[in-house]
Length: 432
Image (cartoon, rainbow, N blue to C red; front, top):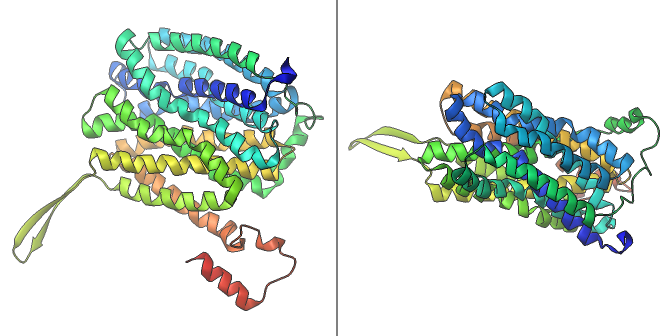
């Protein structure tokens, strides 16, 4: 019976499992708002609370990616879903900050499900379709938006302590559905023989580090903002938790479901073009979002005139929507790079790149809280991301754009060196 299951069925149930995991992974972004008041947390402590599950999800991506190569995605994903139900259930009984942090470390393992599902689903599709497959699976990050819709309603109806219990049951049910709809991993054990240290030799390839950089921007920024934006909206615009969470979905929803579109674009136009232009759009959006609510007086020839600069809710959400779209495209294009360059080592490379992205998602909320406590400017979180993206664009230009022709091929791969005039013309076209 297992052989009769289609690759699309496997892709769908694996994406479902990842989505449920992501809902649980992002849970503290909503229930943490009430916990912040209940426990009297400052911005830094709130950032630590929301980021703690992200840390474990990041650190476990590498070993789980290796285990996926060795034992297969079906087995590893099922065990992950079942085992993580325990710490999720225990959240309901925590009473002090250190207990939430400790349990958050344990339940954060669900975030490592990405490193399991990505190589697993890719092995069921030919190379020319892997960008779509991994983008479709990556759309499971829609769990961030699902969390923003469902968790506030459950919290308002039953209280926040019931929410983790419901999600623990959801993990167990999902494990059953996944096992019934999936099949044996066709790539398990084929390229994972020998000691683990042998698999880490891939770290010598500089491409791995470049892809870590790209993913830490796109996924790290997406995860951090998904956790941070609900309380940002509540504080900036004075709206309820339910309304703030619903509006925050304007960022999380496109940042999730459009990963499949980003994967298809990477299949068609190449991973480099999608990544490069996506970061430019993100840079512009973050520049506009960074400008704080400002009032100032200008002494004109007709006397003093006061001005007020402030982003209203519609403009703010529109910019977040665009930012979510380009982050989705960037996340998908990064793993198109991985599938093209490391088809035989996707498990370990996916784990390494996912680790970098997860660490970005862990560190950024903490940094958001620290700089907010220091400078007391709410938009400082966007200022930080703006600077990171700007530096990353410079590095990307130095490492890729200067050596890439307009058709996306590496200049180093050309059979002969082009004439100087042609090279100058090509570089002029790259910048116009």
